[in-house]
Image 1: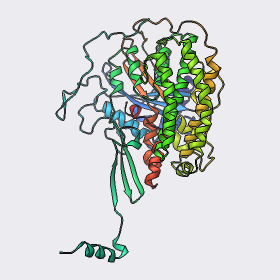
Image 2: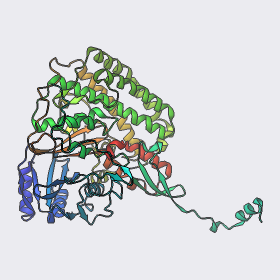
Image 3: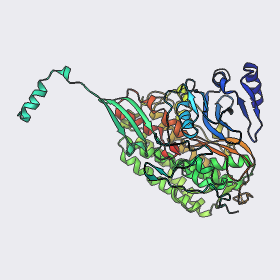
Image 4: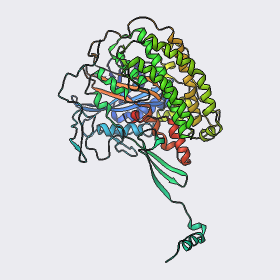
Length: 172
Length: 387
């Protein structure tokens, strides 16, 4: 099964949900309307043999501007992974939680919330998972500023954002 | 004022209804030998029964994904080694394959051979660690010593090849950092001859030990449905009887040219998908790894050990999600590139992260000792859980 076939199948079933194919190399993604993400994922899980949620992660595009959630639907029957991307407003992003469909989403959504501040509606316990509870900000957002102190302890900064040419350690 | 004697007598004379057990909130970790790292599990116990066990992670969080956005593609490679520090070679191979796939770099055949040999040796080393520490969790100290003794030999080989014992920085984009020497090849052959019979010995010592079987059979049972729901891969999935191995099903590198079997659990000692099944899958995988290395070690082709790659790897704009089979499951790197020297976004999908998230469901209502048995059989490395 190719991505184009999956796109066609989803398009006939959910004409409003599928917003097209993102033509990136080497792999393409399907753009999904965030309002319909639950029904699309349920359909893929129950009717199209995408048994597993391989991964769920957030992305931050300051240029668009948008926040994005990428779902990697994994199929053992077709031996393939399909990426679904939902674009959300950059500030105050929120989307329905898929914890009812996949238990893996519980921790993965918590991580996306922790790192990007994306809210997942209907999540049983949406709290930080990797950072401490009282950490300020969402580290993987592009506009994140590392705090100087955390609870009186200095936060070390190992890299300099302004340095545009990283030292290449590769020897040919 | 009552004497101690009166206190005890008074206590004993209380009726049995007054003697009740309380629910106890217990912090297991973050510093605890049986958690295999800095994992904290908040356990609610009622006597010996576990009512709930919630893992709290993040003590080893180094924000690998943020670091990756601030160095170039070659610069990420040493960070990748530090994710799953017991299987650095496999991680680094995953990263190298992900970047090569995006750029379209051809890897020389000699490098592919060296990569698969080291990756399989690393898998043996990682499973030996799991074998040893699992024995230790179950109260068998000898297994731990044997496991570490043999793992040390593999680390010696890696030291010869890369100059480091644990964090190698060996698999580079386009090939490997140093060529393999004839001495190292001889040493690997010696090791294989020594190690292959040892696996059976270790099975006799631990896997088929009556006490060990009693401790691990029918404990921590996972069925296929739960596996899929939690997105479990690797040994966790094969332990419940699913014959799925990326090396076989979606072959990368030169895995389609080598012959090996995929061991799966069959519920030999108790229930399908219990801790013992997962343990025995690891033991049998070591044997398959030996088989793979044997097929390759004599046939390493001549040629360069690294393809033509510039000092800074230029990755065209695009996205890729690349999976490899690591000792703990499928490790995937989702790379988003905007065409600049540094990655726009690197996402590491860690198998251990999902494995440990099942703990609460697996251990509701079991004895405290079974909780330890279950954590051990998940074979987690906190460096990869927290990233």
